[in-house]
Structures are given as structure tokens and as C-alpha cells.
Image (cartoon, rainbow, N blue to C red; front, side, top):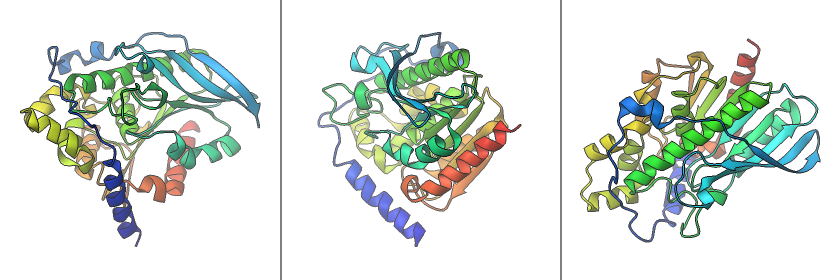
Length: 327
């Protein structure tokens, strides 16, 4: 019954997903030379930045507010070039873990992630929490965008590369700032597209202590070409003469399975859903194999597990993190 319900929810969620889609073609060919996989270190290179806090109130042992800093990559869209997010800081202890949450594509708020983790983390664990906003989502969405995340992943080939690059550089900057200014370890938790970004960051950044990637995508080209969420983007690309092989080549530098993690493999937990219609298990398998099979859970459900399996995701993820923190 759970499998049936999960597939049904995935089906209706996909239908609802495409009720909002780009009104006009987003297509733009590769403007500059396609970045080479050999240059990925310099391509995603980050540097030091200052993170600003705007603490709005204190409650139950937390200072609550927002954080922000200028993006390390200029997209030319003013709202998008200010990185921001929500922050919850333990105001009694300064050696607690620092958990960064990275949301999924087209999410319009952090609510889905908060419903999984926030209550237990705030009430029982008292860890610092940073909710990181991906490019072109939430407050970073330009006025011309019809929905959150429209401009991050699209048929605009170069902008999709740039958005991924921007997300990686900015997230690395936040990680490095926390490492310098906080005493506790850095933990990344990414969901769906957020999992894809955390995985890509893990291949470049050595300052991550623990990572959990939930229902993650691996290759953007695969997701756009072979899953229902990408069908209108694929149509836009095909109408402009782009073939699957072309897209694989263009977006190769965004593929996390092209490199191995710079952090401890045993401190990585991958969670996938066997019948996921958003992120196919075949693509998730590709990353798991390329990374030498780090710890992994496979749920018997679909992408709807973000809702249906909230308790299990929380238990599996937090148990894994706590076990690693003890070592």
C-alpha cells in the first residue's frame, strides 16, 4: 500500500509541478567555451568571505534570524547575487555541530526540510542550523521568474552551468567561514537538487565533516532527458537541435560522479528511493558506484518519501550523524 500511495503521490505531484512552467523558451546555447573537466578545481574555486547575521529574536536557547553574504559568482541578476538563508544559533554552547540544509529544485520555502529535521534538532540536539538558499530560489528569484528555481535549471545551457557553479562556490564559502568562526563540526544535509549540490561540493571541499544526501540527483543531463520533471526542458532543447550526447558533454563538469569526495567516504550517507520518478535509481546508483559504495539506504518508495518517510529519514540521518560524531 505504501508503494502504491508513493507512486500515486509522485504522479500527481509531477502533474502539479508542470502546472507552472516557463511561458517562453529558455533556450540559450553555450556562449563561452564548454568548461573542461580538467579545470574543475579552478572552475569551482572558492575564497574567504564575511557572513553577516541579522538576529531578530531569541527563543528557547536559540538566536534566530538570517544570514547573508555577496555571492562569489556574479550572475548579473541582483536578487540572485546575494546569498541568504535562515539561521538558528545555540546561544548557550559554542561547540555544537553546524548543520547546513540545502533544499530541492522549485521548492518555495524550507518547510519540507524543516518538517523532517527541525523540531528534533531544535528541541533535543540543540545544534546550530543554517538553511541555505540555492540560486534563483526564494528571495534570490528575479521578478521575471515565474516560479522558484525556473532560472537555475533550464534549457539555457550556460546559465544552468553558471548556476551550479554559483551554488558550489557559495556553499563552499559558507562552509569555510563556519570552520573558521565556529568550533563545532560542519554537517551538510541536502535534499533532491540540494543533494546533488552537496555531492558536487563534497568532491571539492575537504572541510566537510559529515554529509547526508537524500533522494539526490547525479547527472543533470540524465535527469532532464530521462525523467518527467525535465520533459519540458528537454522539449525546449530538442526544438533547438540539442541532442542528449550534446547535453552530456556540455554539463559534464557538473557531474559529481566524475570525481571522488575530498572528505571521508565513511562519513557520507546516501539515501535513495527505489521507485523515484524524479530521480531514477539508475542514476543514483552511478554515483554510489563511482564513489566506492559509501554507506547507503534504499527506501521502497518514490520521491514522495520526502513527505511519507519523514520520520524514517530523520531517524536514519540523525542516527548516522550522531554515530559519526562519537568517533
